Image (tube, rainbow, N blue to C red; front, side, top):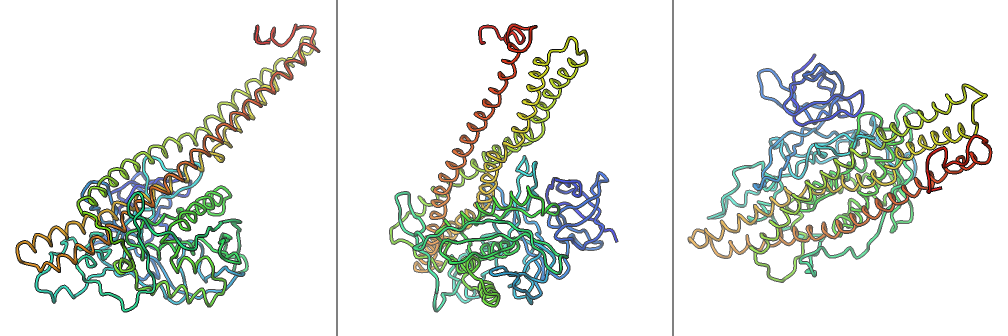
Length: 597
């Protein structure tokens, strides 16, 4: 039965199976049962096709709107879309639930498969995934996903990213036992509350008897920075291979991962990356976790899409292994090294039952003893906020321009050069129509010129693979990283507000000074962590953009050198004209090149 729906976000179709929808557009949904995370329906313009289920809400008669339900899902998760509006708040929208359930088997060494359909499914081994509590359909750190496919897959004027799952609330009843407390945020769905940082700042997160993991922050030349991983490593992503199961009924792509600190490679599917990504979001509250490459409804086994996903997974892996905190995460190490099916499931469940997540993760930090004035920290955060907003706008602008240039290379430029080459070929063929007056040398020269311009058109079409695609991959990664910071900065802003409120209450005699000092001390933890993350972001930014620009300019130079070599091939047949044609006195007399010959 058809249902009414409403679009939550803009979505641009990238192939004939999908349709474009716009935010707040009324939709007709043919069935609320999703197909690999996609719904089929009709937009307000009468177009019929697929669109992401997470982009729409189903409007039910007699009740308010609600997110589209998914069979077999444990319950919807939320996401909060943030904007740089200076307030640190965002508008809440619902994101699609995840699914869990089935048993797995080992397809080959280091590759674990589940009895599920394809890359779109989550883990399926008896509902061992920790279910996220439902809390109004809001969460932290993230933007709606964007379908990306070649060649127009790259960011245009509408940039969006995958939604992130909600973090568990860390509210404690301990505050009810205290005589005087700082007021709690009335917006219970703000990322400051949902992430548990409010509870941490107010001292409502209980200390663990034993904290097995610690992450140190030290003072560097540019302020607080994460202490380097004592055992640095790298990991390659290679050999995307199409594999099948159930006698060829199901197909998927497997990637070979080879960490430098492990003896054997492991094989992982995209859904394994997706599981790890959600664990990272669940645990690391104040860290900008790089976004994974986007999913795609159709064409998942096309060569261009597989190559693009591999390139972007390489970038993602590079950022993971270079981060001093994320690279040490036990779940990440398990993902990179486990070869045994039984051990894999045990480590997976252990990661899902990790207690040091959200606000509790802040208990793992060891911060420097140096004093930092909170006002100076707040000013530093404001400066970074303005910088990240400007960088986000600039990255989007460059992405839009580069995407348009890709389309011109693949379409317009190639087409124009081919048209010019075909026109030269037509002239050559016309000159051959009257043999007694035909000059074989001239005809050959013009024909060769036409073929050369056709080849130049193909060179233009192939060039984005050498330079623009790599540039757009980097820009896409940084769009994701930058989109995380508004919510992370909002955590620090909320902590600053609690410090100021607690000090005011202390001055008025409504709170003990030691309690206000405790709030200030915990705010320092959040401040040091955010500054360390900002510092790491700048370090990576300098490296990545230097490499991006070097590669782009190097490839551009090589491209025009090849063009020059191609152009230099033209005089060869022209020179033959002066040797074999009695009608001419050399190539210059034919093409009026004058003194240049």
